[in-house]
Length: 259
Image (cartoon, rainbow, N blue to C red; front, side, top):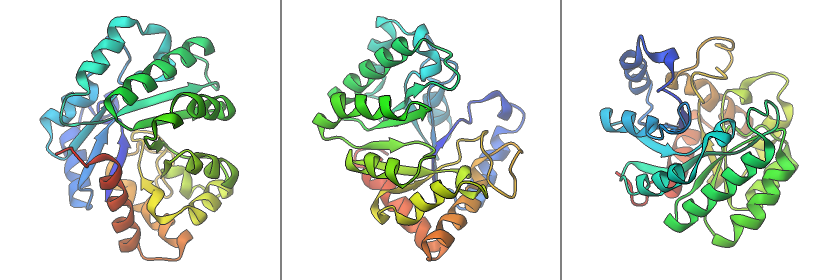
């Protein structure tokens, strides 16, 4: 299995990061993607630091919508430069978050558009964060991303079949995390059941959104097994089949030219 989205740079892992990674490897997680948004600009290398230290890690770089107001021209130039790192596989997580509104919405949109432009120039996929901002997110993707013909990931997909279809029509992969295991997440489960087999991925978003039966605890990559099993149950196939499909999909999308 591959954890396509985790935040192991987080302070929640300061005391036992090595042990967390070892548990993941023992559980069958062959690679993990360290999302490089960290605490926002000027530090853009949170993911790269983990990828440089641990062979099982790949990285992204990007400015989270929460941090959009912190970003300046120098930060965008730095993102463009860091994309040449062979372990950087995507730009993200980027997008819009209208739930918290930690940054003004216009600043979020500006940062999103700028980072789509940088990713397109480098022909790198993007990793999307969208919360209570679905229509604006899709509208910006249709205008600024779709014309480039590059794919991406809808991180921690939490929508229903209609949202799933709009994302799929834009060429995106749907990444399912711990929410999939929550009893009331019926719309997400329906999306996972119906999604094309060549467009599904697994993630943890650790330390957030731990799956049932660990809900409410600190999440970690080893717990991806619970989400994978739920996805298999929903799709009426084996855990091994889900592991194979999601790993193949990950390689197709992100590892064509990466180590």
